[in-house]
Image (cartoon, rainbow, N blue to C red; front, side):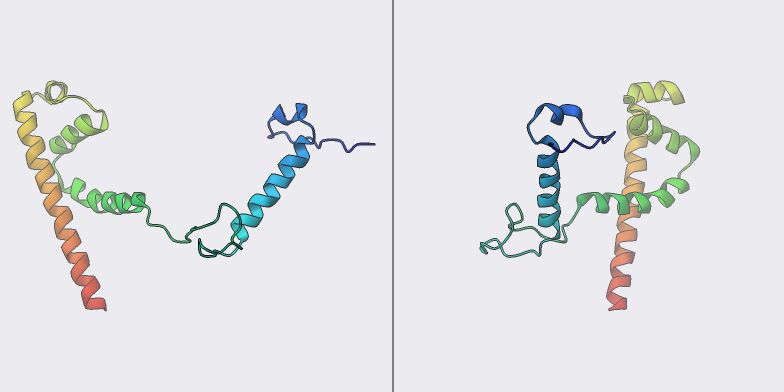
Length: 142
């Protein structure tokens, strides 16, 4: 008697029509597990499992730098006045135009533009000062 396909509530039923579908799925998982657990071997080495050539353990993720900068930005935002935070929130959070932002806070589009330039310059200077302070701390710690 042929083995019955086990019931998996989260598995797609698309395998039911294929011959050996669940067996193929199990085989694919086993191959994947083997390639992820396999030691990294140079790309010129033919012993490297297929698909793992040139795989690196540590990669630089650009998202981490963004998170660091956002964490550095939080205290700088807290130092801004309520109106400045409102302007930033409307312009970049709600993605309103400068004119729409001005309508909400009672300013002209031109004045919103000037305020944004000033606010962003303040935040930029604060981030640069934080980065310089971090760099000097790193140098002293070495």
